Image (tube, rainbow, N blue to C red; front, side):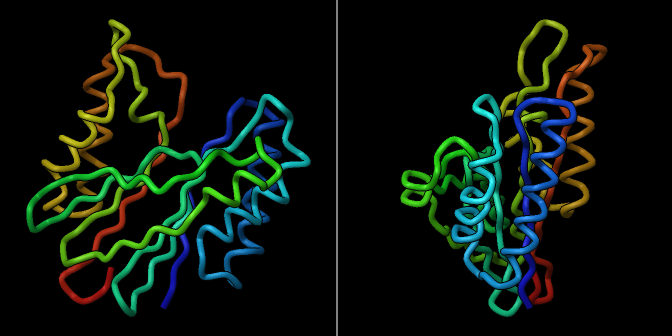
Length: 200
């Protein structure tokens, strides 16, 4: 009745970044099944990756556990962009900002102290949106960023139509915004929605 989801973004490009991300994924998969606390999982990931990450590299991550039995989401964040929470009742969008620092720059003394679990209760129709900075930092032809405010507006306008509508329209909105300007970063989007039946 529990489902773990992670989103991550590694600094840098090429083979070194790919290798670090592969190690990160492996550690996450080994730690997650035995630990219901996202914060504890991220702490374990950081401890194992810290010795292998070069000084100029780091990983931003968010890891969450969805508990279908009670309709809750527990999230921990390691320096990753703050997820958006759409509340269907008041039709509001808020940033979920549990504290945390990126993986790989601290051996654990600071990382472990500030990385904590943050619990959210999802009501019917509520949506949680996770994303990488390729969305908010997408540039138009004049060098302006798409930004978090445009993202919030897009989520609020489309969340009532479901999780897939959020992703489809947000990608359309970003494409329309950037026009012909080439983008240097990829985009990852994950949406979670609690359906009318008592399942998130």
